[in-house]
Image (tube, rainbow, N blue to C red):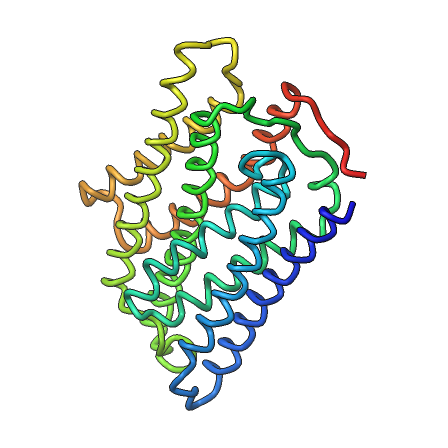
Length: 281
């Protein structure tokens, strides 16, 4: 009981720091002259939130002896954590302050919603991956790719807002801090390639094991995962061939992520029919 309270307390701290980062950044950017150290303040809060979230996930992982992906709550937390990790590598390198703001809002929303929906954390998988490191790697990479696609959704939203501001000649306020549509389009494409690559590796790792033990294949889960992978791959190919660009590309990436996120529920539900469940309380 104390372990569960401890890991949830850590995850609450992480979510609240994400929220603090988002609100601080939003208030500062709405001012006419935001402080010069805004990026440093924002990133400090986000690093702190990410650290607490990682600690909470680590405690849960130690409790079950594996990667904490045993229920919807843990999956959503892991998606938020991975999106923030990708931001640290992408956003801080590009010095895009608004990307940190959008990622903070996105991660805070996912983390807080998962904490506020008790049904998502009622049960946990016991020895979820059967002590199989390859299946655990497959699952971790797959969920991590969803985090990358989540960041892609945020940059796509930024692209849509920038396009709207240019079309309506609204270049003040938050819109002034948005990167150019050309830069955002390039960020979107590179992020999409990274997400597809990670999900492809995940499916490859899983397939190398499934061919040895076809009875272990969760068909509904595999079908949904391949469907998500195929959809993103198709979008990437269309973007590469310049058949889907700019605003249309951003809209498709945003809508596709919402569909992919909604698919996590049915995937997790179908998996729990095949593994023993351990009631937390």
